[in-house]
Length: 171
Image (cartoon, rainbow, N blue to C red):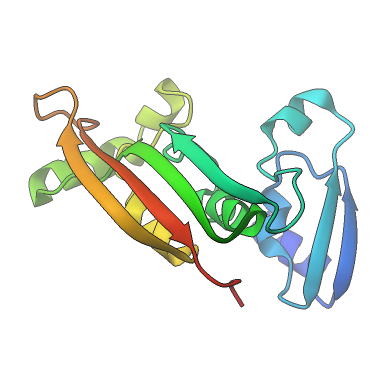
């Protein structure tokens, strides 16, 4: 379906209105020539699942993500959206569980993420490298504390608590 979405959107440019945006999965398929997407979803359940945010570009001084980036359908899209609404120099504060720091546990996480875990845990992925994703989105990580919770080594025990600063607009 992704290839069909790309074909549907190929060649578009400038601002675009997408009616029936669903949960926002099409947003990542827009070509770079599209300068703005106004996504409208008339179906209430799908509208609640959409990952696009309402605020105008660069209108928020700070945002908080707490134990949510593991379960968004498109983590990079969600972070790009946060980057969009946070003003330059604004903060993203985050508390998330992340990919393990040992190869063995990282393999366990990958196995869980590619089998049944996301279906059992509301879409949660235990092995995402969330800090790298935050950086890819154009944020500069200023503070990062790593810790285990619970203290035992489980697939979801490694956490990070941090502050990232929004850089210039992503090209």
